[in-house]
Length: 224
Picture 1 (cartoon, rainbow, N blue to C red):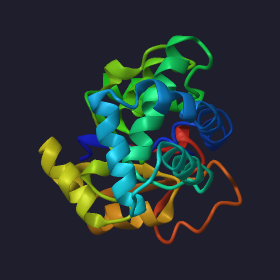
Picture 2 (cartoon, one colour):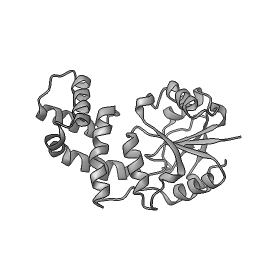
Picture 3 (cartoon, one colour):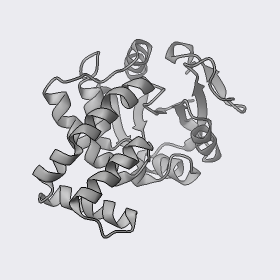
Picture 4 (cartoon, rainbow, N blue to C red):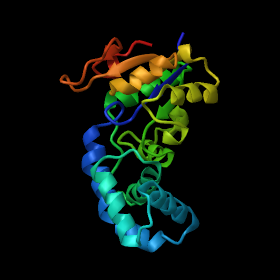
């Protein structure tokens, strides 16, 4: 019996194009001014120091911004980058520059699963802050009351089984009673290795092989 569902965001609850065509360019264009205006604030300074350490520094402020932009262009899953992007996106959401894209079938089924008593969680490479912002300002209103918790790469890499083991321990649900949803086979492989059940959400008919995972075209096709 499934007690909890952990879902990815990009390509699963939400369009990849929203992240790549809206969120990434928004953060990239504003990274320089954000670092200039907020770089001395303790929380931001800590993240910038982590960027320098990750890059093998030392870096000037301009070089730090250039490194961050390069990582955005390369879609790097680097924790301080994701946190800084989340800070920039917060202003965009609050100013109404965009809303968080969520597929209608995802929003409806998440609500239905919540009403049935299932516990819902998010595990995304985007920071927890960015996750909360997307669902709080979604196309279908504030969806954050549906979720019992959020996880990002601070708990571990999404393609490593250890991260899913830590999630199971954190939510105190046996891995065998957790269903993980993603559009990425390597993430599903890692979750399965940790003992979770999996569904490969394949919104793109040309998506990669499911390699033995249950397949679903969208959330309507997921049987829980």
